Length: 120
Image (cartoon, rainbow, N blue to C red; front, top):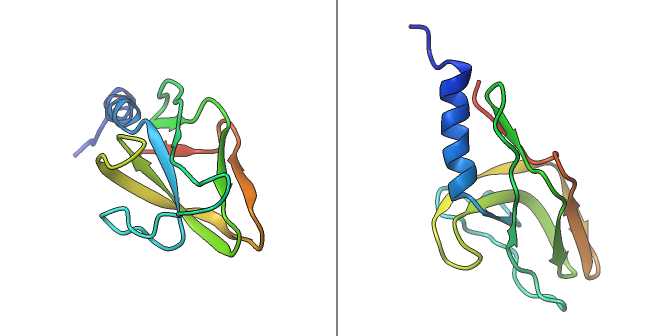
């Protein structure tokens, strides 16, 4: 079986990018339901809108920085994909390259292009 062409992969990723317009931070693997999402802080943690570039060669990447407020005494381990800023449909997650602990209130920024999904 030949599998998907680059155009097929790009079409699937285009659908994901259209549906998953918000990203979240998690303190543990969110599994299939989006559990362990960060809460609290001042300024308060909230999901953030994400802008996606056009899929190419079976890969799609964020096209702008995404900055989160993170409360103190929090360790973040995963980022999740959602359809809405609150509630909504959870589409999945990925582990961060390395967990990050915030002893005090801080900011976690995902640089433009550093949030990438691919279909192998």
